[in-house]
Each structure stands twice: as C-alpha cells, then as structure tokens.
Length: 305
Image 1 (tube, helix red, strand yellow):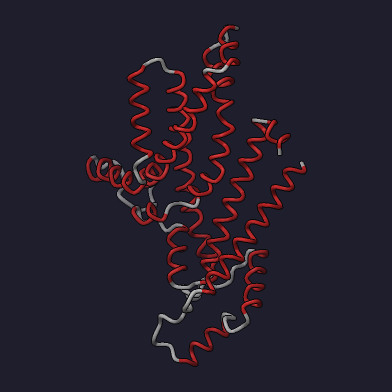
Image 2 (cartoon, rainbow, N blue to C red):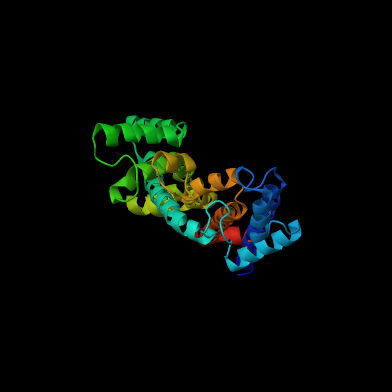
C-alpha cells in the first residue's frame, strides 16, 4: 500500500513538473500568440494581452496556469477565439483514445499471439516466416504501413474508407497502421522471454508431470513473460493512446496531436499546456497501472521496491 501511495505521489509530482517546464519553455521563446497578425494595432494588442492576462508578471501567469491544472480549467484558447481549451480537448481526446485503444488492442493480440506461436511451434518455416514478418514491421515506420494499407484495402479492394472517422470501418486502417509496429515490438519482447521460459527447469518439470499444453503455455510460458511486457506497455500505452500526429494527419482524424502542433506554432499557451498536461497525465496513469499489474503478476517486484 505504501508503494502504491508513493507511486501516486510521484505521478502527481511528474505532472506538475512537466507543466512547469512546458510553461517556462513556451514563454521563453520569441514572439507571442498575436504577433503573427499584422492587422492588430498597438492598442488592440494591449487590450488582448490584458484580456488574457499576458501583461501580468510571469510568476502570476504561472500561478494562474497552475490553478487551472488543479481545477482542470485551462482557460480560453488564444488561437481559437471564443472557444475554451476544455471544449477543444473534449472533442480531441475521444478521437485519440479510440485510435490508441484500437491500435493497442491490435498490438496486444497480434504481438502476444505471434510471440507465443514462435515459442511453442515446432514448424521451422512457419517460425521463420513469423520472425521475418515481425522484423519487417519493426523496421517499417507507421506512415509507410499506413500507405501500404491504404493502397491495398482502400484503393485496391475498396473495402474501407480512405479517411474520416464517421464510420466504424474507417477506424480499421488507422488502428492497424498505429498498432502493427507496436505489435512487432511486443513480438520481439515476448518471443525472447517466452523462449527463456520454454527452456527453464520449471517448464521441463511441468512437462514431466504431464500437464496439458494449454496449462503449460499459460502458466509456464505466458505468465513469466508478462512482467517485462507490462513494464514495456506502460509508457508505450500512453504514447499510443494519445495517438500519432502522422497517422491522424494521413487519415484526417482531429486528435490531440493536431492541436498540439497547431498550439505550439501559434504560441497558444493555454492549449499547448492543456495538451501537455493530458499527455503527461496519461503517461503517468498508464505507468502506474503497469506497476500495479506487475506487482500482481510478480509479487517479488513489490518486495524489491
């Protein structure tokens, strides 16, 4: 219990620290959110800065921003006039999380299945084919995977839409493009530890006792391999749940990545900080969940920590 509370405190401290670093880095760059509009007069710029409290001291601006993080009220967007950051994030978070969740599901199913197949199969050519496919996916960027999938299944066969997110089938290609490279990473990790478990004394003893193949695969190969996989999936899940800017751009998905880049280019401080906090909180939460699952599957990790 103490370890869990300590990890929660570390997660909250990480969010606050990243927010502070992002705030001062954004304000240390040249230019402001209204400098690109040459039509504004000096009086108009002064009025806008007063309206958004940009004329206050940097410390006061930081304290106001910190209060917004605590209350989950990031204020109005400086780029999208008349729209709050919460509204923009509220429309973008479901898109990125659906994309990331679908990609994660595909990655886990494909990666675990391929890893377990290599560890338990006796067919050399099938194992070689799976390993070659995994290596090819591992070396291929997700935007190249996206282009191949679009060429085959959208333009070639016409089975799914090219872009958009209104139809259920339109999520298939972006989820596969984002999830398959992660599946290749999981496959490499799983097969390495699964092969070690397959050659262990515990596995040989279980075989000698006459246990079923299903029980051997689950209890003596899959279970020992889950600890490193969960440790890897913590930060990887956060990255994939917050989506990929490239994939979102290719498939015209209005997710968090698009707002993050636009906010950074336009010096939209409130929107950029809001997206940063969401990213950091997601990373901290996924890492915390992974730590809890690791403690459940491997109690020795809690004793060591």
